[in-house]
Amino acid sequence: MIPEAVIAEILRRTDIVELIGGHLPLKAAGRTHKALCPFHTEKTPSFIVNPERQIFHCFGCGEGGDAITFLMKHERLTFPEAARYLAERAGVSLPTPRSAGAGTSETDGRLVLVEVHRQALEHFRENLRGPEGSGARDYLAGRGLTPALIERFQLGCALPRWDALLRALKRRGHPDRLLEASGLIVARQEGSGYYDRFRHRLMIPIWDVSGKVVGFGGRALDHADGVVKYLNSPETALYRKGMHLFGLNLAARAVREQGRALVVEGYFDAIMLHAHGFENTVAALGTALTTEQAGLLSRYARTVVLLFDPDAPGIGAARRNLEHLINVDLDWRIVLLPEGLDPDAYVRTHGTAAFAAALEGAQDLVEFFLDRRVSGLDLTDPVQRARAADALIEVLATLDNPIRREGYIQRVAQRTGITDRSLLEAVARQRGRGQRRDATVTSAPPPASPPSAEEQLIYIGLNYPAWRQRIASALAPQDVRDPTLRQIFTEFIAGEAAAAPQGTSRPMSLHPPEIQRRLSSLWARDPWSPNAQEEGERLPGEADHETLQRTVDDCLARITQSRGAALRQAQRQALEAAERGGDLDQVLRLLSEHPSVKRGRERNEEESTA
Ligand SMILES: [Zn+2]
Image 1 (spheres, rainbow, N blue to C red):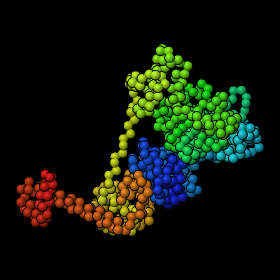
Image 2 (cartoon, helix red, strand yellow):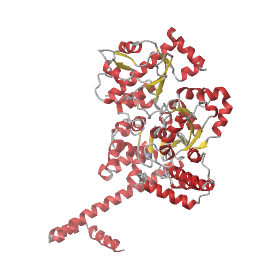
Image 3 (cartoon, rainbow, N blue to C red):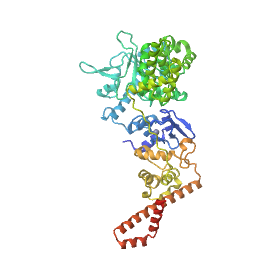
Image 4 (cartoon, protein in one colour):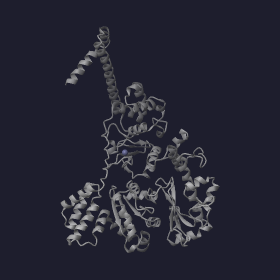
C-alpha cells in the first residue's frame, strides 16, 4: 500500500495536461484542453482535461478522474503500477517495493520486467560507450548516426559474449525465472543454465507510448553466415507483436502537431528520417501494420503515409492489411520511393527536399490498390474489362463506410466507363455474399440533461468553498436523492473534507469509479452554461456572488418544494389507506393534523386530468 499522502504528492508533482498530451492530441480550448475521447468512439471531442482541477472528464461516455485514473484506464495499469510510474516520472521516492521476483501476480511480474528492461538498456548503453563498443560505434558512424541521434534513440550494443547481460542482471539479484520471462535471457536446451539472447548486436530499445522500454531490436554486428540480421524480443508480458510502433514515444508530438504520421518498415529508416527532420516517423517493427497499430496512430494523426519498399513482399504485406487499414478512420496514403530505395537510402542519396516532394506525391491507399488491380489490363477489350471490373469490385466491397464507398465507385466508373449503377449493384452483391461484417454501432451518448437542483448545489459546494456551510446546513443527506451525489455531499460538502480548499483532501483516484466520474463531471461542467464543454471557455470560479446567491436560493427552494411534495404524497397514501380500511378515527386525525393533504390530493387530480 502506498500511503495516501504519497499519492497526493505524486499527483501534485504531475501535470495532467502534459501527461495526457503525451497520449492524445490535446487542443487548447479556453482554459481547458480537448481531445477525441480514447474511451469511446466519437467524431467531435467531448473529452476535457482541466488543468486547474488536474482532472479529465468525457461528457460523452462519462469517464473521468485524475492522472492515475487516466493511466489505469488508458494503459490498463493497476493502481500501484500507475502510481509507481508517475512517482518515477515525478521523482517522488516510494516505500521500497517488494524485492524483484517476490511478487506472484501478473502485475508485479510486469513491473519487475519493466525494471529488468531498464537495467538491460543501461547495460547496453554502457557497452556502447566502453572500449568493447568500438565496433558498434564504427558501424553507427558508417550509417551516419550522430552522437545526438544515438542519445535520442538510446542505442546500445550487446557484447560478443554468451553471458554479459546475464551476469549484469544476476548481479542485480534477479532470479533466473524472471530473467527468462524477460525474453532477454534464454534457457539452454541441453543441460542447465542460461545465456544471452542478444549477442554482438547493435541494440535498439522499443518503447511503449508511455516511455517504458518493453523490448529490444538487435541488428547483427557479426557478418558470419547463419547470423540473423535483425532479431527482436520475443513476446513477453510486456511486449506483444503488432501492438507497438517503434519511435512513437519520440514522434508523438510532431505527429500531433502535423496531424500526419509516416510509417516505415525498419528501425534505421525511422531513425534516419528523424535525423533529417521528419520527426513524425514511426516504424511498424517488422510486421505489416496491424489494426492495433493503426488504432494507436489514430490517437495522434489524421493522415498516415505508408512508406513501403516497392518490392513485391512489401506490397503483398500491405495488401493483406488493406481491409483493416482502409476501414480505420484515417486518411491513408502510400508512397513508393523510386529506384527501389528504402527511406533511409533515399533521404541520404537525394536529400530532404526530394523526400518531402515524394511525400507530397503520396497516393490515396484505396486508389493505389484500385490501380494495381487494373494495371496491365486493356480496358477496351470486353473480356479484360470484365475481369478488371471484378477485381475493382472486390476492393470497393471492402469499404465499410458507404459514403467513401460511393465516392470511389464514382471514380472507378469514370475511369472504366462502367456505369455507377452497375458498379453499385455489383458491390452490394459482393458485400452481401462476403462475410457480413458486424456493423460497428457506436451508441451515441445520451443528450446532456440540464443539471438538477441537487446537482447544482453540490457543484457550487465543490467549486465555491464559501458556500459550503450554507448548503450543508440547509440540506440533509436524505434530501439528496441521487445516491452517488449523496455520497459526494456527505464527504465533500458536509464532511471533514469540506475544510480542504479543493473540496477533497483525498486524491480522486482513491474514490470508487462512479464517484470519480461524477466528481469529474461536476468539476468539468459549468451549470450556468451546460454546454460549456462545447465552448470550453467558461470555467468554474467565474460566477459572481449574485448569481450564486440566486442559484443557491432557487435550488434550495426547489428541493424544499419537492421535499414538501414527497411528504404530502406520503400523507395522502396514509389517508387513502385509512379510508380504504374504514378507519374513520385515523382519517379524521390525519385530516386535522395535515389539512393540506386533501387540498394536495385535489390539486393532484386536477393535474392528472389536465
Ligand atoms: Zn468518452
